Image 1: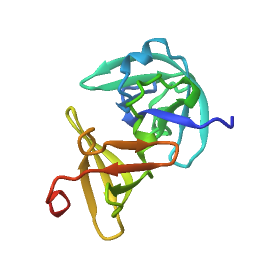
Image 2: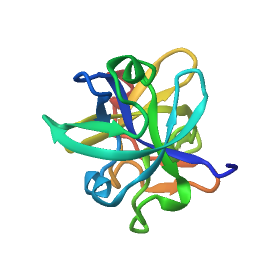
Image 3: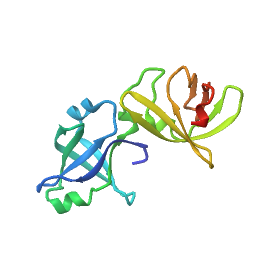
Image 4: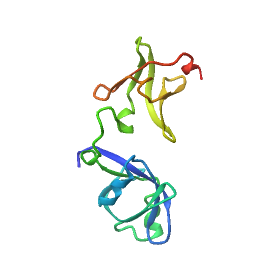
Length: 171
């Protein structure tokens, strides 16, 4: 498989005795699990395993998954810290001004005046608030990902222009 994969869940640990696993949900569209069967488990070693979701249920803002051919706690343990992924072509269509977290990672960030701030290394969510964690080699900055502060986002060029409120980078 040559297509890029998109992570929709991150397995934290086995749950139960029949191979179930507990996972953090990485998608803004958890309803997608309703019609999802074929997935890829990307192990922490980088190995990709094609599998199927046999059963699932949501539990306290997480998901419990039962994957095909993982039928014991020992089988489930091999999935610890694996990402559950789908092909990029199966990702949900977004509105024009919406972006997947993975699209924002590694974007160069600079001010409207052209001052380089750094690169997006991760996305930090706190409730409804989305923040870019931008690293520049010396320090990490947390920049709110809202249109007023990030008026220009060019995913193709991996570039974000920001209009920062005074003092934001000193926090």
